[in-house]
Amino acid sequence: QESRGLGDVYKRQKHKTSTTKFGVDILLVTNKKGKTTGYLLSPNEIMNKENQALTEQLIKQISKLPRWSFGWLQTINGSIFQGRYVKANYSSDTGWKLEDYLH
Image (cartoon, rainbow, N blue to C red; front, side, top):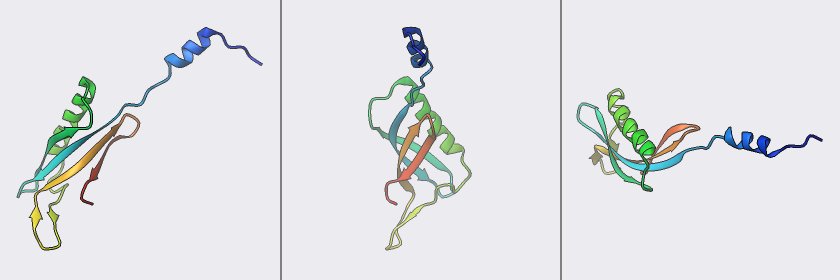
């Protein structure tokens, strides 16, 4: 059996990658022409600069999506809401995942 010294343990720990995970709440508002804008409502925790930059990039990319990427929300009684309340979860392993709170 091979013996491992402290140097080997250090090398293994040094090459270990950590996964970044965090979530934010975003309001997506789609105007009458189908253009969507994202508004940060609340981070689940105080964000560091890296997470803040990732969130700002997400909101910027949302505004660049094709028109009507996010449709309006229509209720049973026919009311239409131009906003959608979404949970945006980020993982450095998988990227962003959006989950609509009302669906």
